[in-house]
Each structure stands twice: as structure tokens, then as C-alpha cells.
Length: 522
Image 1 (cartoon, rainbow, N blue to C red):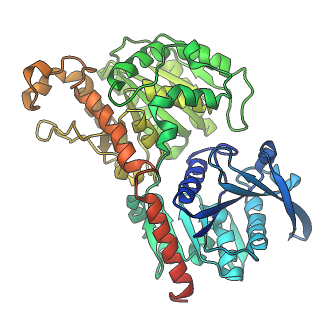
Image 2: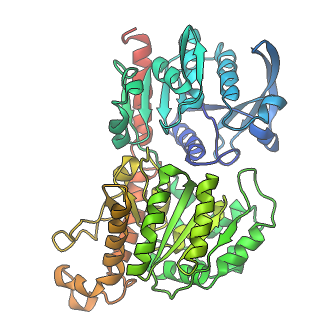
């Protein structure tokens, strides 16, 4: 199958979130499945000039009565080898990454580029590609799909073909098939008026995103951190760190936690990180708080964007009460809305012995947070898919999360009453139903109680030989090490692009779009 993917961003060239990761991995694994794949994108901030490229053509675009000449660059993804075609114009390149003007022009560029190409399917992603999908279908009659990564963002209202809609609505209307990025989220949003009206009589599915387990396997933690700093910072120079597997995570992870977080290795690392040259979306990291603890002091981590969606207001309400009840520490790695950043800084200063806030975008530090934390918390109000929970579990770290969207689809929850159903041998996290203060308090207390507090009770109802009864949180047969192992193997078997059914489901979606375009209802 000849597949063209319209990618607003793609990791690591230009990326600020999970969309870029999915664009990199989806194209890689579709190509690995014996398809011919080409990615079309824009030369945001001239970043593609840093790769080996060839100028193969020029395209003239008239936009708002002004003529723009775009170079067509041919290159390959530096890690996956997938072909990338890049449209480049100095004036447009330097507009903001999410400026709608870029994607209005992009829609004309892809039509001009594809008009003489043999293409089986065009796969567009999120609102940025909605107008392009409409024009490809309307002008070229090439089958198209639209993937909704976050329906909260619809793009500007624009006019095309006598209609006035948002970018996302144009994509929904004209796409031959539509999907979003998890089965549960597909059900959650299918009755939204602006979605429901456009998905009738066409394939509509939820296909769970995945992660590349080779990238996030903790056996490669040092290699990944070195690569992400262009070999400028060697993590072994700062604190204890070792590659580990699911089988020895219970021994290695607590040592990483103690050495990096409680003994302070992370501070020197951040100091040196702030001195090195970084990619455009990497930033310096500001540090607030100064937590300490012993090796068995529970550490709850948070990695993600500082946005309302992620449930920060809930955490700000819940953490003071949790600190009063439990001997517990929190570490945040985040960047985003300034209001949330400022509140988190003040919060970490107020609870400096219990809360460490790292404000910045630093991918190497995400590996440290995942590896050192006992649990990762994700109290999202909505989460179309989420990749953080998969990345966390790949590092053998279970997740406390709201039972929504992709979180529900990817986390195997610890039973609410383990006395009744002790599923420690299967669980990879804790899910709570209501994203509010009481929900997150229950979720964190449930996780800490059954991984740190109730160790002596385990043998009362788990069928262990007495000699194997756990006595401490990190004993091999204690609940937390069991969930560490569960988490890793769950990702490998069910959530990795390598082994999950998601790539096959995309191929099925593409087949449905092709049928709909040529044989379905007009």
C-alpha cells in the first residue's frame, strides 16, 4: 500500500508532545509492515536544514493575494529511515508551530504535490490537517483518513468550498474514515454534535496508540539519556544508575530513587543540562523544592504538560492532605501554561520538603523520573490516549490515573478491594473514576497502602509459601515488585507498536476508507 502521512510535527526534528512521537512511530511501523510510506510536513523553524536533504522541486502558492515559493526538500527520518518530504519557505517556516496560516497554506501544498502521484491513502492527523484532507478528497479524489488526537483543539474557523467550519470539522466532513487514539475515547466523543454529524456512513474507530519498546526499555536507559544530550552528559557521572529489566527492577529502581532524588544527584545534572546547547523544544529546567527521604520513602512522579486537562488543580487540592496522612514525596517534570507553572513553583516552595517541581522540557530527565518513581500519577480530566502511562509502565513503574480514554484502555487496575480479589499478579496501576480531590486521594492512598503499608497482611490471603512472604516493600514477592513486572510485560505484549494489533487496525482503517471513497455512499 502506498501511504502518505500528513504530519504536523515529528520527533525528534520538531516535536512538543505525544503527537510527534506517534508520527515517528506510526510511519516507522507501517513501513516495517511492508508498506511504502512517505511523510509530508513543513520546515518548522528551518529545522530540516539540519538533516541531509535535496531540493527536488519548487511549488508556487498564492495565499491572500500574495505569492509564496516553497522549496520541496527530500530527506529521511534520522532514526527510522522513512522518507520525509518537507515544504520550506523562510517566511512561513518561522511562524509559530500552531499558526493556522501554516496549515491553510499546507493544504494547498499537499494538493499541488500529490496531484500527479500514485497514492492509495492519505492519513491526516489532528485539526492541522483537516483542511488538507478536505482539499485532497474534493480536488484529487484520493481516499483519506483523519485521526483525532485531541478533539479539544479544533483550529480556527475558515471558509472553503462555500462552507464555514473549523479545520477539524472540514477534516471530519471530507475524510473517508475517522479514528481517534483509543477505543474508550472513541465512545466518549462519538455523540458530540460536531463529530456525530460527520461520522455517519463511514468507518469510525478507536485505535490505541503505542510506544516503541526499544526506545523506552529500561535496559537502554543510559543509552537513551546519552543520545538525548548528544553525548554531552553522562548520567553515571551524577548518581547511581544502571540498566535494568523487569526481573531486577525491584532492586535497581529504589537505588536510582535514593541516589538521584533523595541524595541530590538530579540537581547537579540539571545544572549541567542548563549549560549545554539544546534542541529548539528542549529548555532549561528551573528547580523548586528540596525533598529528602530514605530508600523506602514512597515517591510519586508526574511527567507531562502543564495544562488544565492534566488535573493540576486536583493535585494542588489533594497533596496537602496526602502529606498529612502519609510519609510521601512528589516530583513533577512539566512545562506549559504559565499560570500553572507559577502556582506549582509556589506550591513546591510551600511544601519544599515533600514536593520537588522541575519546570522545563527535558526528555533525559523523564527517564530518571520514570525510573526513580514508585508510582506515576495522571489525574487527567480527559485523555484521548496518553503515552506517559505507557512510557512509565515500560520503566516498570505502575500508574495511578483517572478511568478515562486511553488510560482506561491501557492500565490494568488493582482491584478496589484486594482482600476480595488480590490481583497483584496482573495489575499495572490504580484507576479512580471521578477526577476530583477525593478521587485522586483515594487512588494514591490505595496505591501506597498496598505497596508500602500493608506488606505484613499480604500472606494472609496470597498463596505464598511462608518462606516467600514479603516483609518489605521491595521484596521480590511484595505487591509493588509484582506490579513492576506486570507493567513492563504488559507494555511489551499489548502496548508496544511492535506487538499490539494497532498497526493492523490502521491498515484495516485505510482499507475501509478506500472502499468508502470508491464504492461507498456518496
